[in-house]
Image 1 (tube, rainbow over the protein chains, first blue to last red):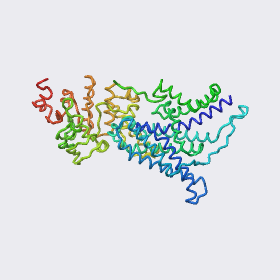
Image 2 (spheres, chains in turn blue, brown):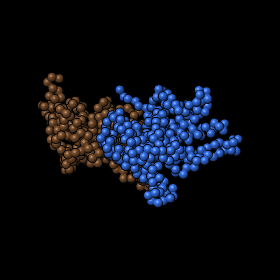
Image 3 (cartoon, rainbow over the protein chains, first blue to last red):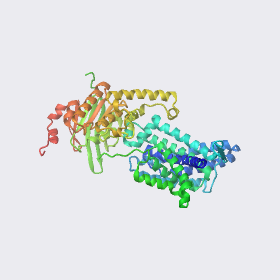
Image 4 (cartoon, rainbow over the protein chains, first blue to last red):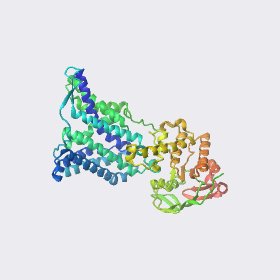
Length: 309
Length: 260
């Protein structure tokens, strides 16, 4: 029982991190109907900026305190992501208003390659580390209930908390504020949104900025776990099944989808793995996504598309 | 009736629009006076929708200009039009399908919202009060259009006639000075058409909104409009009161045509 719980909690925490990356996809898709293939590249770009600035700042300013250096680096990285968002709107999206979804998808593919290239040109292509002072040591919990207690990784625990807070804040923002409503309106119909005076360009800049911040937080968390390297850009690919599972248009879907996949991966690896020789963790998410595509293509929480004939 | 037709509020001068080699509109001029109901009619493909899209800034005409309250607009766009007090509805309803009726109509208040993003995000006093005030206004519109019973329903699930009404509600939420209606009665049954006519007349009468509407069904239009412009093949062939237009031989031949 204790072992099962430990696996379950481990899965939930890993799932929260998937949710965070998936959220980036959902935000942009909801607000602009664009499937943003560049989300992974944005995670990498933001993490690179964060890693390098936190390394450079102590030298430039002579501040030895790592907390101050990290905060400054975070602010600078966030500002850089805002500039990236603004440039994407200005140079790419603005010229593609009312275009087909496939056209916009191709445009984001281009943005992805561009960001990966430029990011590594500016910030370098080695493996860098981000150290925001996350505790690395595991703790034992519930020792009185179970013999031996449950082992929990503190770093994962804090990361999951941060992710959960961010996800909750964004969900509220979308549902409860006027700007959130305008964002949803733009997602549904560009032309109608413009005709009631929703400034399309500003909405796009806002949503890409938010997605940039989400990418930055995801980049910091994943980066401090795995190190900042090119493979971070592929983290987004692991969030793809989450989006399919939860539905592209649903913020709660991204959360629940992430948790299901996180837990599913861990439990199947531990309990089914020995039967088939292991390695389930790698393909489990994609299998689940495939099953969903066959039987419930709109995902768990997505809006069902009904076309009037 | 209390309303009084005022001065010219919208003046279109020599508007020509073409798509590649296809001429959609050729040298069209007409004006719209304050508080009037002005109809644009014509057979299919006459350029009615193009005309509306020019006023609203969706299409930019190659020639001609739009004068709105004495101000010249050579480059109109939908956002500018909205800021200038022009609202519109769509022929193929363009509501936000995933959202409820209430939220759809609330989006019409966007331009009236003053609270900034930070105030909204943290639900500060000003943003909260503002949201409530807008909500009250929207409830008034919902009462006016008699759609209280479907306030919380996602619009995608509503029957066609009601969706058209919500579309009108969203435009009304902008408290526009000029309301453009693109075939408000297309695809409706007789009862729905009567309801819609009544709402259009009430909007005009109670709020004093100037209305420009496009219609294909001549009967209804003649009953509710003050003045009518008739288009055929992108050209203006008639302009005047419903009676004058009905007596115009060119209009009669366009509609009834010798060959029909």
